[in-house]
Amino acid sequence: REDLHCVEPLFPHVKTCIVLREWVPEMPLCPESEFRGFVVNNHLTAVSQYDYLCYYKRVADNTELLKQAFITFFESELKHRLAHISTYVVDFFVDIDAVLSMSHASSDGGSNSVSKLMKVVELNSFESWTGACLFSWTNDRDILLGHDQCVLRVVTKSPSDQDIIDMIPSDWLHFVSEHFKLPQTNVVAAAAPASSSSSAQVHAKGGLCSIC
Image (cartoon, rainbow, N blue to C red; front, side, top):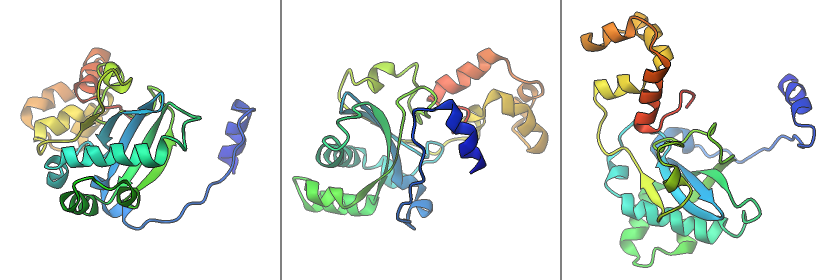
């Protein structure tokens, strides 16, 4: 309640409310089942694995089937319902095993069946402060704006120790190196706070943001 009172004066024309949703117990147990979609002018332009730090084999092995499922769900369930918003970021939760089983059993994908296997988690602003997951608001601008066909990105291999260290925001690296044992090659680099230029290189590398 105190937080709402602090925020309301900043957005006087926005009506604040509390929204209660059905609890879906599978969501916190299946991080590989959440994806982030990007919609521009009512077209699904890109989809990213939400948990972009981890490799999930069943996701990486079935990108085309999953991509088609997202497109089918968007066209049949979201496009007409959210046409008045037109440009936004949407998080999906998908029953991966069920989608794959259905896709293998049916040649047409079945839009009615797909709609029952996906849920919308939340909507976000199509702005640079919204996490882009495996995309970059700067480097992948053309993709996110839909200058080509819809693109699905997932983690395609298990990250190495070096990959994980490279994902650590530069302003956290010094703190992490003091409390965790890092490979020797990175201890020297972590001994002092990294410069802003190195921070930009880390974030640009995988389209990661320092918040999520």
